[in-house]
Length: 97
Image 1 (cartoon, rainbow, N blue to C red):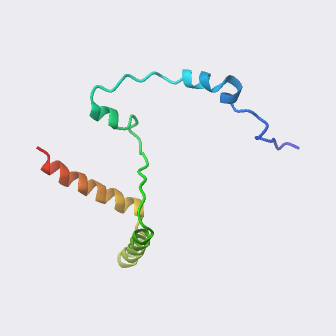
Image 2 (image 1 turned 30 degrees about the vertical axis):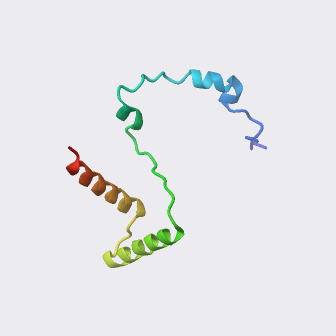
Image 3 (image 1 turned 180 degrees about the vertical axis):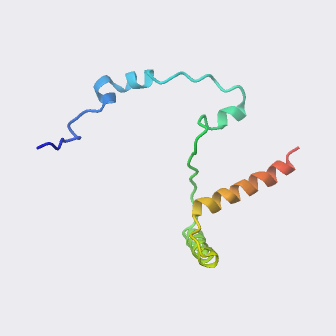
């Protein structure tokens, strides 16, 4: 009897309307440059998503398993991908005029 049906309990944005919720968000100043406009506004972590072939995904997961077994510890896909992204950025920054 103490359980409530959340499907029938409206959320605050439904109670007050989506416009009211959006109006309560702080205004953001326009970006000074195109580079600023392309950068995330938050300093926190963001998600990077992309599509790849099924074969590439399977080979990547297999490589993660082999490295995990070789090093005797679990290797996380996220750590490997972030490391490779950082290497790519460092290489490109060296070549930038």
